[in-house]
Image 1 (spheres, rainbow, N blue to C red):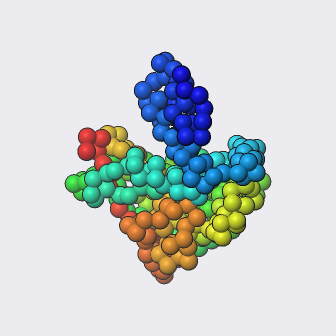
Image 2: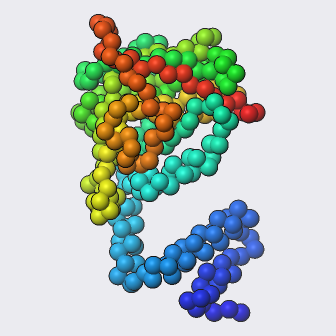
Image 3: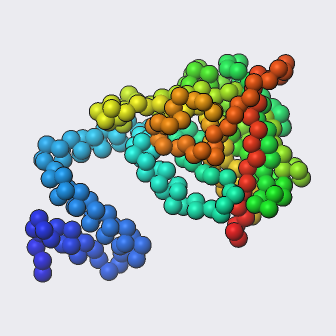
Length: 280
């Protein structure tokens, strides 16, 4: 029998894991304990720092609500969300790259007709988004659902302002036909800060980091027999592309939003999405 000491701490804790634990849980928890104990030894954590960490996590949980998930925000700002995304989406060359889901997606947004304007509050510069949903061989994908959402001109999502913005403002789902084409009108999105009035915001301030995300439109593209794609289209030239607070920018997702002369829209963003078949 081994007793707890500074040198044997991780092995003693992991030695208490019972035989009924699943192999996967055993692997995850064993590694977690080993890395966590190694971290505490490496920085020689003080009791005051340990208490600060406990209070930080407590406050993070206390600020969570039905419309705000501070733990996702913490994961995002530490780069963990993007690392998990990268590990779980090692797709073949040619597939559209993924990025973080974010906390502001809403299930069952209205399915709208192609070309519909999803900006319901009348704010912002209208942008036409268009392109195709294709497989890796360039074949169009029929019945793909293109689920989109963005902030409004003031930099807020509708769920952040339920008493100000109309329900499902800047949200919608579009179904592709035989040609795989999609088209809708939204706004040219704007940069915005992630919620920084809670413990995660205090952490960023203490680290000398800003809370801003570069302007982007969210896309969730799904189709029968294909892997689901979660990604953004970022506005080229945005101030925060190289310092996104949640590390979500990838070069292939930066798009030239082109100024156009039209009575229907002021901007245009064209982008084709390439999905992986389930067997690829």
